[in-house]
Length: 612
Ligand code: ADP
Ligand code: MG
Image 1 (tube, protein in one colour):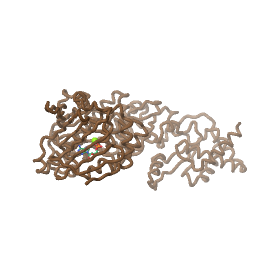
Image 2: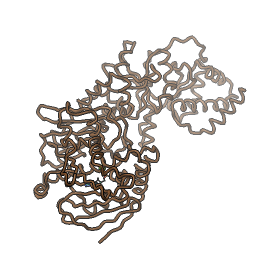
Image 3: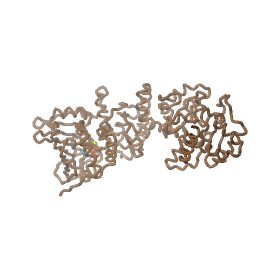
Image 4: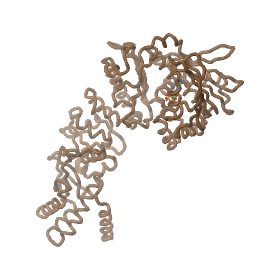
């Protein structure tokens, strides 16, 4: 019986990219196959915990490399979980994982497929970089039937039944003419030492008549003493567990002692993953119980705001027989999470001492970490202390809250902030004019999450967060410039209030503007206009829409003139036209879309022409 199947379309495209654009990095195929073999051994070990029959059958778990120089083949074998027919079809060919399509898209956009290959779970296909034919013989633990899967990596694959005594998988590569080096045992030894030394199972080189040789350290890296681990070892282990290809920005290896003991080997990547903000993203921690891999889906192990952390937690104190589902609710897991989070936060604090270095982390993951200010009540202040923000005090340097608080000159301790999408747009927001004039620093917050945590963190080290719309009444400027005549100003305000009744709640003359004629803001303490826009973008009802205020600057020549014009009834139409343009101007400065852009640009050209 034989089944011929075509590769699913995305698989074909992906294979094409892998095979044709990764020449220089060919040897990573071995890392990927060994990594899969190691995963298969992990799975068997886990199954054996609850299945005495399988436990009895499985000998020492290992990975064997057999090179055949005469026939130009290399076989990677493991005695792990193995695959049944469905597994072969689902994992190696037709029903592409969601990652495959993402891989194709990203690789064609960035052209750096090598860094993506592991991340998107398409590592197996790297075999076709060196082989023009791959033959897999596999038997799933507990099954009687064995299967053969073979493919040339171009159009499809064929599955037939096969004979195999023991569970596990043999992957035989028929090496391409330009890949014959991979039968050279010296070369193989060197590749394994470089990329796969950290694998916990023995990787054995089958030397035929000359016997066998274990070529890696074959002990779980996190159980070794720090002094025996090189930076390279850590790095390769990070690549293995994270499927990333960058170097870790942070490596944290620790042993926690006390009422529960556990070891952690944690990493923070140097690059942000493509799916950091995708809602279905899993966290990056693998849970082991006494070196047995249990799950990489224990959500309770680390909070969502640390979803960028990769690594391993291993505790011998967790019960081995507990189901993966039950683990989510285990109080022991809660304790481990608590301890791990506080270690990471402490380590991050240390790293803030080197600003440039810390910024590498902050630019990638700051927006995620800040979710913790909102979510993690217990660590709120500490996380806020790790946050950096753009500020009116600097052009490109970011500033911590501690630094801001230190710079506060007034006795009244307020941390002023403004929110929006873009730092440069914010810098020019008219709402900042009074602050600039008074020399008061304002933080420029541009991550959506900022809107939320400022509402739950009442103060930082005694200083109170205030949106710029909450400017204090006593924050006035001594002004000597000419001001619009009070009577005509009142007339203008009334006229504009009536005109814009449906658009803004109020029109008021303000003392706060020094440069702009107008500005849009909200009633003190209400939802910011930026948050309103965010909610609208997410189709959230803005039932609690804020009262908008159009502020006009009675010192601005344009407003003075316009106020004067109200004294003559015949100007009415003109005033209305200009008032409309002013409202549009205020919206643009706030980062808001205007209702009728063509009216605005038409009028704009008309007025420019008049001035020429
Ligand atoms: P990933 O390892 O990220 O899942 P791969 O392309 O490397 O992606 O492997 C695809 C899948 O094929 C694996 O998830 C696994 O289910 C299966 N697989 C590959 N190699 C083996 C093996 N040696 N033993 C058992 N299953 C394997
Ligand atoms: Mg893999």
